[in-house]
Amino acid sequence: MLTAPFEFRRASTVNEAADWLQQGTEVKLLAGGHSLLPLMKLRLAAPAMVVDISGIPELHGVIAHDGVVTVGAMTRHVEVVKNPLILAEAPLLSQTAAVIGDVQVRNRGTIGGSLCHADTAADLPAAVLALDAQMVVSGPDGVRKIPASEFFVAPFVTALGPQELLVAVEVPSMPSDAVSTYLKRPHPASGYPVIGVACWVGYGGATVRLAITGIGPTVFRAAEAEAYLAAHGLNSSSIGEAARLAAVHAPVEDDITGYKRQLVSVYVSRALQHTAKGKN
Amino acid sequence: MPEVLTTVTMTVNGQRVARSIEPRVLLVHFLREELGLTGTHVGCDTSQCGACTVLLDGEAVKACTVLAVQAHGATVTTIEGLEGTRLHPVQEGFWAKHGLQCGFCTPGAMMTAAYLLSQNPHPSEAEIREGLDGVVCRCTGYETIVRAVQHAAALMSEVSETSGAEDVD
Image 1 (cartoon, chains in turn blue, orange):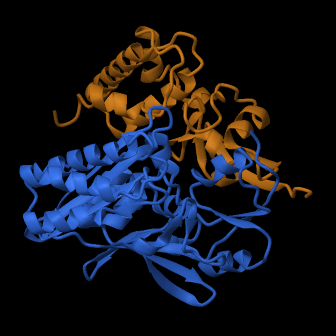
Image 2 (cartoon, each protein chain N blue to C red):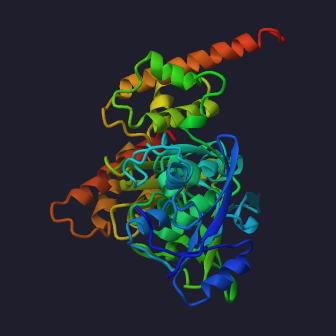
Image 3 (spheres, rainbow over the protein chains, first blue to last red):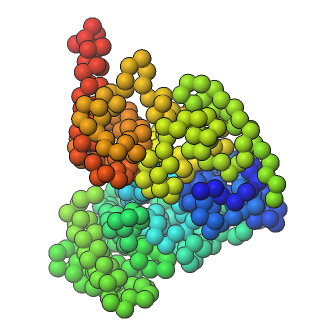
């Protein structure tokens, strides 16, 4: 399948990419291409200009400083899986990246591309939401940070302005006692999560984070279940009630048969059981 | 909109090639139609089946989901470039263990297997299955593909043991 014709540019700096974004024509940024190119091949997207941002040095690299891991937007999933800093400071992010698509997809797809594409059924939004990550965004008015909780606005819609690009993701380091799990039910044909649950527990059980992707219109936190677990501790008797709370309060749509809420209950329960056993 | 041709240069199977192409040309079409390397197949064309898998700078990628312009300056290895002076152990393995039926997925399966073994020379059976997750065999001949990769891994470790015989051990 051929995409519609487009003008191709390579940006070598963030400013250069920003200049092209401000040209007024429909411009799309190309990172690894594993979200954008399938859409363009199906002609669901037909940008007049495609700007390859893979050669921008500022978008690459992973650094840890002051309790935060900064992951460049062009970091590929395979690198997120193996990076020693991410494995040490924010292992939930690596666990999630490890089950995206398949080997070939993880070799090309990038964290920035996946997050900006904001597919309802993407894996990474659950991890960045559970980790309270900040999106570092560059635009005409300089650099700003958008919390993950405000970034995913609607299916395929983010809080990014039309002339902004994602530079990096800042992930707060998880505490040393943190235990985390990402558990998904892959769609048998596509591999995308029908539901994906990212969770971690730390600070002696005082902090519990549960973020759920795939099943709602956007990724969401199971706040009621988190609060219940923080108050009652994570144990075999609290998991059932937490799963029930997550299912009852899940913002799922068109769930006439109750299947979606059932999946939320079952997968939250399983993810918490894995976490309670210290399994990753 | 008239398309402006873009020049791409890359090294394919050891040979440097340069072409002026439309930016929308996919790497798989570049390989097959510009270079005549039809060993790389187009299967689903939606980055699911893996029949188009090639190595891009040594990493397995689906060439139907990469623009040729994205491979500018890169090194590409296709199934035609897998063997050196003799068959690659993965090719030996597929031959010895009947790792193909219709053969349509075979180029992609072999490139994916070669990549797996380059990353993990001694994979467990579970690791082989995980490594081949991105390859769909329409004949469902997965069992023999797994055996083929196990055979290839054994051949490769024999070769490395033999070549290392004069060293410390």
